[in-house]
Length: 123
Image 1 (cartoon, rainbow, N blue to C red):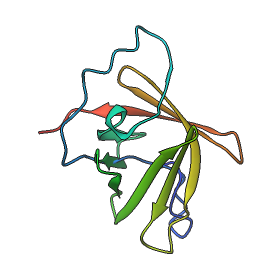
Image 2: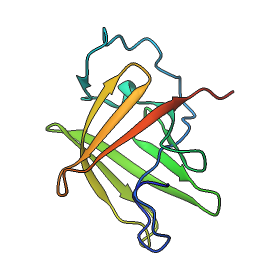
Image 3: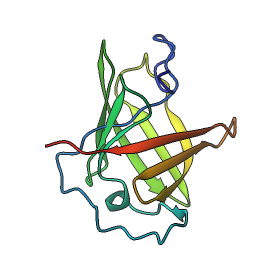
Image 4: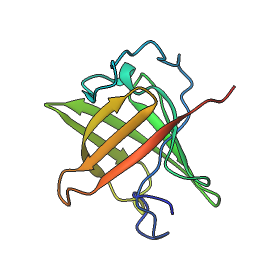
């Protein structure tokens, strides 16, 4: 059950591992917090057992699947989390992003579908 981004591979979404510092210091007090800056999501996130995303605090990231790696740039502006894949076979996406501890919820702006990712603890 991969989630969104690569139309050719039939995927819907995923997350990546950051080369930057993990921001485990984000405190949400059990509530969803609107993501407004890259530092809130930097690190590795996964929606399933075969896909993960790395988000760097510098607006760069990668999506890893069992078959491919896709690099991208992302921005967070005016409450919109935009992912722009470098490979044209992957679909760019716009989301509203919320974080609640180790859970990242992405709501597709167009379809309203919600994707839930979990922080991946990696070394």
